Image (tube, rainbow, N blue to C red):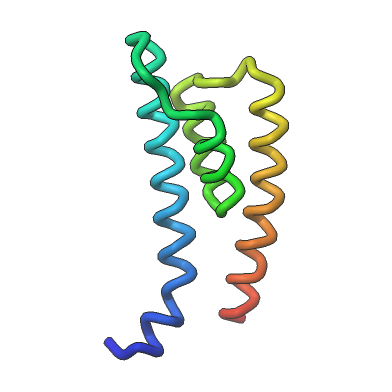
Length: 96
């Protein structure tokens, strides 16, 4: 594998990894919440969403039924999704 191949697939790998991390952060936060333990800061979840992991956040939100009643979190997650979609569009347009 050459450097140009890594640069070419790098953005796609980034999108996949950031969404997996965001999904796992939601799982971690849900588990911590159910045990009344120290949790993942909402700011961390917001940042993950804004960095391209909004799909992971939203899937985790509904998969684990976590933060689904917090309207503020939902609105910010949707804003993160819009930002993520822009990032995805930029990455995909690079490949077309």
